[in-house]
Length: 247
Image (cartoon, rainbow, N blue to C red; front, side):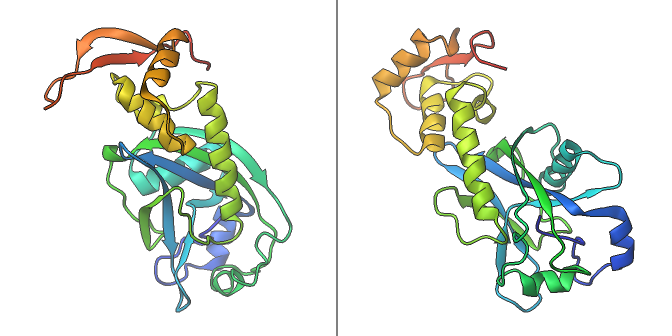
């Protein structure tokens, strides 16, 4: 939860928004992006109303009759103009004090009729290739930007906790081969795959050992193709082994 009322410079009628949105249920999204070398997370800068800049994970309250998945997809679509992104629930956060921290009350007082009304949020994580789109700040964010996933600043509300849970879930899903390929081209090298694993796990692996495990455990299928248009020796291309990975 971060932008109750979808600020556009002036407050929209609170009464109108109260009928459109559910004030007690929200979704928040930890959007992980890979730039070919390192892992990044998508942050937004909230309207500050003369206060200090506030950073947060993108999210919003449910609107109308939409379900949780639809709300999360809408939030991402408004930020990226893309649909069909990989999106998965990773936790629910309902501490009664999550919107009562003194650092958040000045901002909430500008946005909400009752700033301390309890909000339960369902968290999601998403995976995107950063080269696929250009970010665009929507009506609920004054700025949207990529930030190093391992140098996260102080975020609004309990978003640091949500981010930590999202990263833990991402790593667990990666170890079970359920995710990771969303950050790679359809045809990729083992070097590219290793870079994704190292970025998500924040670790380094021996090239030979990683290659051996990927092939012996049949994570991927070799193609009768090699890279083209590269200055170095073209590397073998592979694709995901859908029969080996879990759904």
